[in-house]
Image (tube, rainbow, N blue to C red; front, side, top):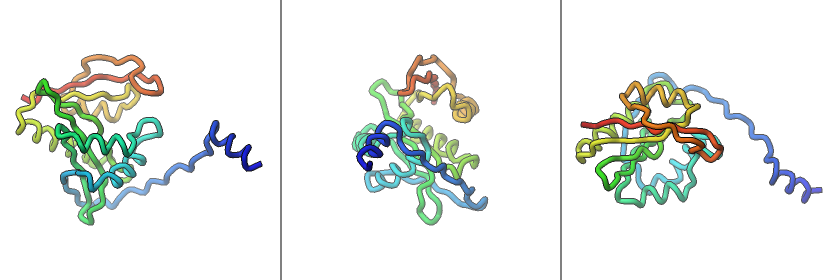
Length: 177
């Protein structure tokens, strides 16, 4: 019987209880710091909470990104040093940058943290004389699209079946000069 249950779980994974989100205290103070290889486990665990299965990165992907000399990565932390957000950007040879991923813990959303991280990374890119940043966003991710539009990113192209589940994406860009 146990073997049959294991086979059944392989094809139909057991239901996962949804996480109960309790908003963090309104007076929480945050700061942005460098994210490096010492933070791999923490960023990977936070990534699992920020994105659905199939949308999140593996620990190996984070190891790879951090190992690249062309990657800029930051974390946003609370005063007690708990990571609540992250951002990764890859510098391209043509003088542009690619926003690889950005995430904020569910209990810390709606506080402008993603916008703070984007502003921080854009300033870092300007100091490196990077002229443009691009990103891909799911067509169904309206909250992210609204943030990017608010920050002067523009849709350049619809990417048909861009994501693993077949969902379309948008290529968005912003000039940094």
